[in-house]
Length: 355
Ligand SMILES: NC(=O)c1ccc[n+]([C@@H]2O[C@H](COP(=O)([O-])OP(=O)(O)OC[C@H]3O[C@@H](n4cnc5c(N)ncnc54)[C@H](OP(=O)(O)O)[C@@H]3O)[C@@H](O)[C@H]2O)c1
Image (cartoon, rainbow, N blue to C red):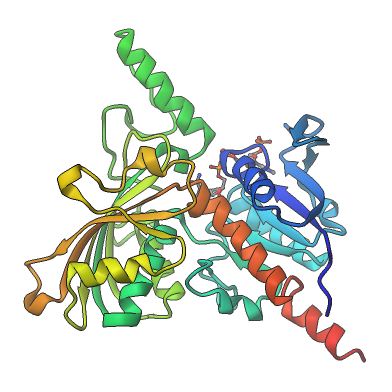
């Protein structure tokens, strides 16, 4: 089947931090957008946004808004995705959903572009974009899985406030200004002040004592890496950083692996950059990763607590709004176009074998 030269693309949550980054990344990468539909809540409907030389009016995200849409990038929270993604898919759009609503649903591919793009083949109208903390971890773990096998992983995250959205960015800014002015630091997005603090609570608590965010790293990593029994644990911490998540990762491998070998393995993964020269104070940093699409890995060293040279410790940093959300979503869209899988599998089958 020949590829359409341009696609009708909808961005749901287009006024949000991730939605705006999605629009930007679509433009930067030259994605073949014919019509661009910007959708948000009724509160924003009617506002006009300038995208390049086009002035686009924001529309309310309702079912009819997806008529004629080829690809819908959703980033307006799990409730909206649960309600509207099936309606969009029903109307023939393929949804790439950035929320947690569909990620663990059997039959919904959960895809990191350089790890498991082939999982897209069977999609039935909804594809899930992983959680930002899982996203930056998966390509690094894939390199070790393929070369030396994975036995056990312990991840501690240091996550930026932009991962919560526009309100949290404003809250951190407000608390910094309040601190400088000697005023009280008011918290409403988070349960405690985030400025000059570290909060070991991201998303809600589960009965097992973990937060949902921590459990997303566990369950999503298993699904993406096709390792359903992978032993993995996570502590997720919100820190007063505006953009980029950092992660301290401890990996126990099946076979021995040296830091040099691991650096070579990481450097060979598309989109992964090794920054590892501690003598020059050169290692991945949140402020340097912000605005970039790559995943940065450094501080690679042997973990002496694991026998036989089968343990590694490393530091992984990436922009949560770009690779952690918007860039990977657009990369999924590109993979669908490249493979001619934009339409859901059942719709493709109808075209290939008309009744
Ligand atoms: N931030 C990240 O790093 C990150 C990473 C991965 C995934 N995500 C996920 O992406 C989603 C959005 O995150 P964000 O950081 O961009 O949040 P945000 O800045 O708070 O933006 C929320 C967006 O959702 C829209 N929205 C809210 N209620 C709506 C409704 N009833 N109908 C239609 N649209 C509605 C808002 O539109 P209005 O302006 O009209 O209210 C806005 O465009 C969340 O599911 C989040 O979990 C975020």
